[in-house]
Length: 348
Image (cartoon, rainbow, N blue to C red; front, side, top):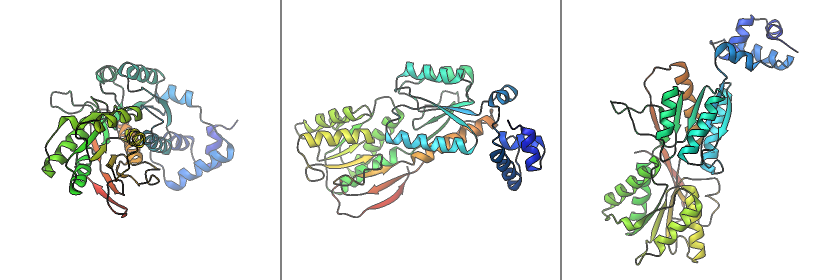
């Protein structure tokens, strides 16, 4: 079995240089780094990660806790996290908290006990227990997709966070529908308590105000961020004495549910009801009609979460940061517009 010394001899460098390349502990010239990696490949050298972790107190692993991994949005986030982690030489341990506060704390505890260097979490609607655990054990943490309100005296967030803009893009969907003549626009909102739900409701209300339309609480029904809930919520909106003529769905799973509800009632989109959705996904362009949507930079959110965590590991005492990434408005035909596909960047 090849040793680090064998790799050093083959690459013509010192053992220390090999260590720096494999552990990322010091910058190495590109050609030297490549020579070491070529030698590792040629000799089939496998680092002893257990021994390395005992020396460095690092396992070069990251824990990722996100719910609904089957959701295409979180799947793309996972791909972004995995690619960025691999690029920096980190492995990934994945757990699904199921959006349950007690289970969330338990899976993060298990990840922590497996001595991951840090965790990336999409927090639940009630993350108090999670925040208390992470703070008590000083676990390097990044929250993604959903943000947690600041708890420090100065109101700053206690952890690094990265998510997409939510308020402005939702407002854009509402004003777009209002510009097409709709005066009763319904919202299928997400799970109560989530920051994404709050922000999209705020954006919905802002869009109504911008368009000069009144707020009607009956036009907002929670679909709990899942397909079955989206179907129920859409059914409730369609059962109103005066139902909406247009609908905004606040995530991709609820969009699927809304489409099921419309199909069961034999209602067409956009003929009977115009539809815009928050979250674009791979097959949104294949529906008939094609779905007008807000596209989140999901892979970039995952990659940015990894970079924030690595920055935290390098500088444990630096101030926490919250990063918000812009979305894009993807103009298709479910809103009732003629066929003219387009994409434009959005921000708050």
